[in-house]
Length: 289
DNA sequence: TATTCGTGGGG
DNA sequence: TCCCCAAGAAT
Image (cartoon, rainbow, N blue to C red; front, side, top):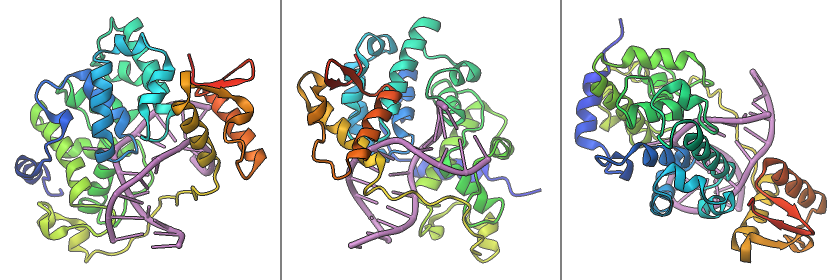
C-alpha cells in the first residue's frame, strides 16, 4: 500500500494554486473547453491573451460555428499547431448540431467531438462539471512516475495511466477534482521535467523517486525533430502570410515564393490543403471559408 | 503504434 | 548557440 497522495496535494493546492482565468468561478464549460484546446502543447502564458480575445468574439459554441473557419485560424495567431483551431471550430459545429449548443458533460460524448481525446474529455467533465474522473496530462504522468513509481521521467502514455490516477483520487467528487488539478499544477511549477524544486514539494516525504536517491531511470520520450528547415516551419510560414493577407487570400505563386527549398514549399502547401487549413481557388490560396 | 503537427521562452 | 520543453490528438 503506497502513501495517500491526496491530502498533501489538496493542502498544497489550496495555498499555491496560480490564479488562472479558467479557474475563476463560473468561467463556464465553453470557456473551459476552449482553454483546454489552446493548452494542448502550448504554454499557459501564451494562451491567456488569445483565450480572452477568443471568448469575447465567440462567447458560445454556436457563435463560433456561425463564423468561417478562416476567422478561427486567424485568431489562433501564434498558438501553434493550427489544426487545433480547425478542430475547435468543427467541435463547436458538432456541439451546436448534436448537443443543442451545450458543451456535453458525458465523457463519451466529449470524446466523440473532433479534437478531443482522453485528456481533454476528462478535463472538461471534471473542471467544468465537477464529475469524478482521472485527468491525466504530461504533468500528472511525471508526478506519478516519480512519487509512485520512483522513476525520473514518465514512460509512454498508456491507458494504465488513467487507472493509476484513479487510485490517487478521493471518493468525493469535489476533492477528486482538486486532486486532479493539484497534480497537474504540481507538475507544472514544482515537479518539473528539468530541475524539479523538490525542496518545495508537498510530496517530498512520500516520494519514491526521492527515497531512492533521485536515480536517472532513463527517458522513454522521443526527441523532438529539429524545427529549423522542417516542413512544419514551411507550413507555418504559409499560414503566417495568409493570416495577414487581405481577405486571408494571396496569389498562389507569391506565397513564400522565395522559400529556399521549392519542393518543400509545394509539399507544405499541399499538406495544408489536405488538412483543410488552406484552400486553392482560381490561382489563389486562402484560409478555409 | 510510431509519426506528424507550431511557436517561442528559457536553461 | 542549441536544445529542451510546453494542460495532446489524429492518423
